Amino acid sequence: MTEYSIRLLELADAPIIEGAFSVFGLNKPAQKYVDYYTEQQAGTRVVLVATVDDVFAGYVTICWRSHYRPFREANFPEIVDFNVLPHFRQQGIGTRLLDEAESRIFADHPVVGIGVGMTADYGAAQHMYARRGYLPDGRGLMYEGYPVSYGKNIPVDDDLCLYFTKNRE
Image 1 (spheres, rainbow, N blue to C red):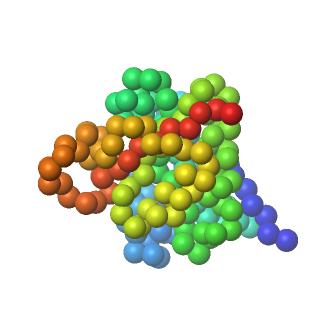
Image 2 (cartoon, rainbow, N blue to C red):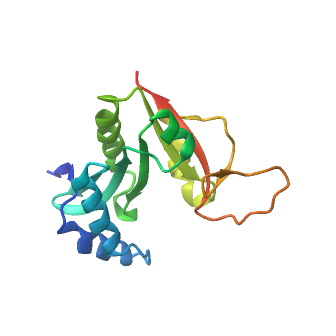
């Protein structure tokens, strides 16, 4: 029987996560997760790690103080950096990670925020957030956290986002 687990990031996870993503050509340096661990220890971030039969499958982080100004000013925690390894997708792991993240946030906050990229690479995430009840925050497209003005030329990359919120039920 397959065993699924969600737990907090441990320092020893950093090289494991880096290696797991590098197999798919994704550059996610171990230092990023060492920094996340330090932030988790300081209480500014929570990093939830999913495993399947004790094998790393994905993670999501909660920033208690969002980098996105409208969320920060409203005191909305933000779900940030949500990743499930390709061969573990469509198995409910992302759902489990988001369930746990939302549960932790809604214990103390009435609203959670999340941003999503605008390219097709983010299509599955866009669908998932809509199915889970996230609604656009009404501020339109953002690039590096700033509004995109009508007629402005900007790069289409991971920094082009639409932000969403979800209210506690």
